[in-house]
Amino acid sequence: MQPVREGLFRACDDGTARLLGGRCGECQRVHFPRGETCPYCSAEDCSDAELGPRGTLWLYTSVLRAPPGYRGDVPFGFGIVELEQGARVISRLTEADPARLRRGQSMRLVVDRLHNDEDGNPVSTYAFAPEGE
Amino acid sequence: MTRVEIAGVGMHPFGRFDDRSVVDLGVAAVRAALADAGIGAGDFQAAFCGSVYSGVAAGHKVLTVLGMTGMPILNVEAGCASGAAAIDLGVSAIREGRYDRVLVFGMEKMPRGIIRSSFFEPWREEAGLAVTPAYFALRAQKLMLESGVTREMLAQVSVKNHDNGVDNPNAMFRKPFTVEQVLESKMVCDPLTLFMLCSPNEGAAAVVLERGTGSRVPVVASAIRSHLPGSVLGEHTPLSGLIDDDNPPPTTLAARAAFEQAGIGPQDLDVCEVQDTDAARELNTCEELGLCAVGGAGEFFAAGHSQMTGRIPINPSGGLLSKGEPLGASGIGGVIDVYRQLRGFAGKRQVEGARIGLAHTVGRGANASVIILGPL
Image (cartoon, rainbow over all chains, first blue to last red; front, side):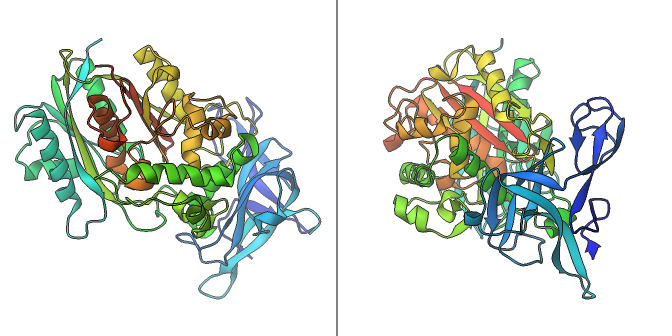
């Protein structure tokens, strides 16, 4: 599938995905998406860091109506997941029903279909899915 | 330090006005403020105009209509804090001795519905990550998990502000609601329902600031702050941040700076007008301004402290939930609402004996502003 933007994430053979982030050589903190300058300490000494696939759900909600510029299905889940590498990431969630989610839940990063482009080809993004589903 | 005072205020009501241009709205507010101050062309030396969606040189267009050009006119964009940022520039310029009197105004005609913001890259919109009310919902959920806030309290904030707005002639929505009506209104993003969210709209507001002599309401503090790196929940809406809950938000940074300038603390305030883009935002702001402890917003609200009869009435104007939010004007509108309280001109929503008041905004950037007025 065509990603919604190049350089954001990578699909793995086991069905999980990795976010393409960066790690600062000075302060060692990770960021996403990958930048040249560390967004926390301004050092220009960042290297590639793949983030995920495991995380813990921190906050979540559900988007019921399509927001501006979005052409995919609704409802969809929306939340913040804490990654084992020490970052909180804002993300689409594959589970759209808040009643089926809870803080602290184990999540894994996957590739999720967003919509089909004008030629009928699927466009994908990263998303977190509840572990075990 | 030079004392900066408010010499006059003017507003165009907030609402929807299909027959009027944004320039018309600005002209109406500026005329009203100049009349209130008893001044005209040539009586102020600079103008600062807050707006976000009004295009190139919006402030110039308003003052051109009035035949009041020639002096410096600065157009200021700072998201929801645009009007407050214009005030901050005006206050600073007088304090620095550059001018004796300045005009500050702001106006807006907001697009309808969920605001499509150039703040987001197109791919974030396509990926469904540019959903402003969803970010509000996450902040609301955090309050529910960590600050003892319930769904009913979120509804009660909306009920309080709509009750307050009934008597505000400049408010867009002047109808009271019950808790049940708020909870049963259309779900937008769980836990936030439609009546817990403010409506982007249209309006204008203006103030005349001058180097004071001690006879008028003073601006004793004005501070603007942006976000520190690291938070994922700020109005800067990043894609990632750190696992760090001790990162002070921009409102806290602005409040600390403003309280230091004024030489007072949150316990000294008699009235507040704060950003209630959604019901949860008002509760967040109570914590961020230091009106209650972090984690204490639920207890603070449940005790009734922010009600008209409480220790520190919050949003007696009806807040943005009643007034709606025309970005360039709303920050100035909050300052005018506090000013009217300190003058005793707030009518049925007057906080008796109010001497010191605070006006707050926070929004895209992130930018937060805290402006403190009084005592006379």
